Amino acid sequence: MVHRRLLAAATLLVVLPMATHAQRSVARSPLGFAPDRLARIDRFMQQYVDSGRIGGAVGLVLRDGKVVYEHSVGWADKSANRRMGPDAIFRIASQSKALTSASILMLVEEGRIALDDPVSRFIPAYAHTTVALRADTGRTVVPAKRRITIKDLLTHTAGISYGTDAFVAQRYAARGLGPAAGWGWYTADKDEPICTTMERLATVPFVAQPGEAWVYGYNIDILGCVVERASGMPLDEFIRTRITTPLHMNDTYFFLPPAQRARLVTVYADSVGHLYRAPDGSRGQGDYVDGPRKSFAGGAGLLSTAHDYARFLQMILNHGEMDGVRYLSPKMVNLMTTPQSGTLYGNPGQGFGLGFQTVEKLGADGLASVGSFGWGGAYASTYKVDPAEGLVIVFMMNQLPNSSDIGGKFPTLVYQALVQSRAGVVVQR
Image 1 (cartoon, rainbow, N blue to C red):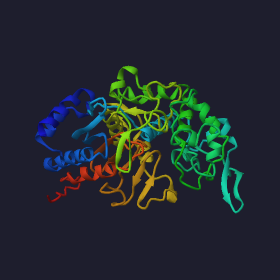
Image 2 (image 1 turned 30 degrees about the horizontal axis):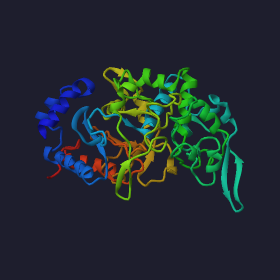
Image 3 (image 1 turned 180 degrees about the vertical axis):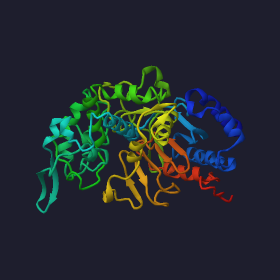
Image 4 (image 1 turned 90 degrees about the vertical axis):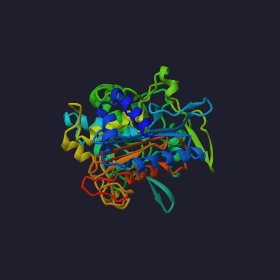
């Protein structure tokens, strides 16, 4: 097992520059982790494959930018006899939101956008939006009390859902949104730019007044259009030139190059303990290889690897800097990872910043330290960053629908192996 991890760490010397000397580090110093407890994670992941609860997964853990744990298990495509590998490419869905949010904040730092700007400054269709409210007589549509701002969208307090709510679903479906867009958030099959789709979204009623509720939905897709309008370039080009290329995230795309098709994992689905290949189309495999390649969905459209995504998170953990390149200022990263939604984000002990869920009380999110932040994606991938412990935790799988609890348990398995905390407390084994 140790030999396998040494080999894995060695391969990351090229594709994951932050892990320089990772092989020596893992061999000579476990960086505060107990090797025998790390081995529990291998067994834990394999049990989920053997029991048919998941098809396959990749787990990756960094501490201080060095690889502590990396393991792939199961199948990338079982019917093709293709094993899961550490370089597998996953649909990361809502993990795309963090990159788009970072893009917006880069433009804020350049003075091209202000957090209090109304989104209608960039997309005029949002100058006069409406809200569908429940009433004694059924449903009533009223004007929004104020214009939606950039900050409303970053914090998911604009009142905009994915349009699957029963009392607006028909209106959304009639415009190719909500129930007509897979699970609501899917746009990879649309033969139009994302700004066209988001302009059409402005014509349907939202489900809460701006600033009055935390509502998860198309917010960051709208911001993807704002990036395009404010920067003068398509979202995929902005993210590629400003984030993924300088960060050496060479396997992160909105649409997969055909030559990389074999590295894209198959989406599996589970129903009452039965695992099967998800169907083609918007509620399964998606159009990420053969689709129109026109809709760059900042809220849910990216593909990536565990290695690539860990690099982005390490940059955030480094206060906006990586390998001598600065992407965001430390003050902006602090704002991004500090609660900004007040009491509207209703999970006890947690908050929501400008792109991330945050931990405000020990025990509110498993064993994560206060100040930790993270999120996940609809295909069941998850991530967590723990600044107090210097940790980046990435768990990748593609399963939709998914009833497995492995993603929620993976961070706990990581923390149980951490026997030396930053406070100098040795956890008794």
